[in-house]
Length: 318
Image (cartoon, rainbow, N blue to C red; front, side, top):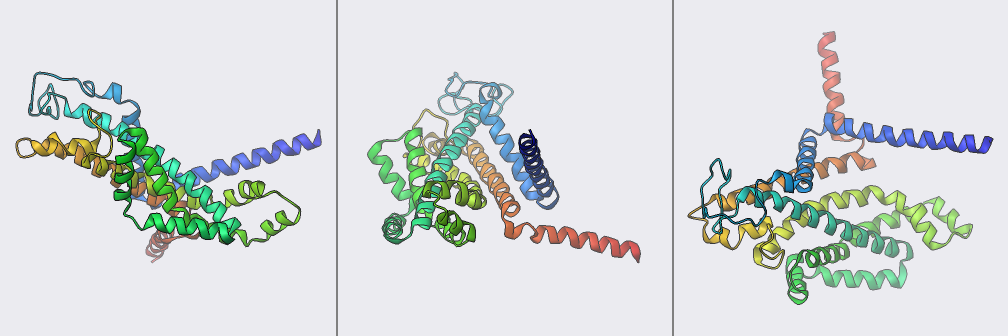
C-alpha cells in the first residue's frame, strides 16, 4: 500500500513538473519572443488551413469553370487560372501538401539522423568511421541535385518526395547528433550503466536518447521550413509533386510562368503563401530552440526583460 502511494505521488509530481514546464515555456515564448509568437500563430493557422482545407476552400482543388483567366471578383476572390480553376482554392489545398510533405519528411529525416547519430556516437570505432565516410560522400553533392537524380530514377510523387527528402536530410544531418552523443557518453551515469551490465539498446533508449531530445527537437523545427522550400523547388523544376496536385511550387511553374505577364497574381499568391509560411515556421523554430536549449534558457531575451524591469524600477525610485 505504501509503495503504491509513493509511486502515485511521484507520478503526480512528475506530471506537475511537465505541466509547469509547458506553461513556463509558453509564457517565455509570449513575453520574450514576439517574433516567435507571431511565427507560432502563422504555424497554427497553416495547420488549421491544411486540416480543414475541404471546408475552407470555396471550390474543389481541380474544379473547372468556364471563367478562364478570370480576374479577382466576388465569385473568385483571387481569380482563376488558365483552366478555370479557382486560385484561392488551389492555394488553400497547397497548404495541405506543404504540411504533409514538411512534417512527414522532417519526421523521417529526424528519425534517421537520431538513429545514425546515436549508433555512431556511442559505438564509435570502425562503425563510426565507415558511416562518416559514407555521409561525407553524400554531402559532396548539393542536396537538391541529389534529390532530383533520385526522383528521376524512382519517379515523381508525394510519397517518393517524402522518402527521398527524409533519406537525404537524415543521412547528411547525422553528424550533429553524433557529436552530442559523444559528449553525453562521457557522463558518469553511462559508465555506471555499462558497469552493471545494461544492454546497449537500453543504454541508448533510456539514458542517451532522453538527454539529446533538445537538439533533436531543434533539428526537427529547423528542417520543416527547409523541406517545404525544397519541395516547392522540386515541384517548380518538375521533379516534385506532379500536376494536377495543387503544390505551391507547381503553381509557380508551368501555367504560372506562361501567363505571368498577363496575370501576375497567378504566381504572386502561391509565392506569398510560401514566403509567409517559411518565415513563420522559421521564427517559431528559432524561438523554440532558444527556449529548449539549456545554454540559452537564461539567454539574451531573458536578460533584456530583466534589464527593462531594473530600468523601470530605477526610474520609479528616482
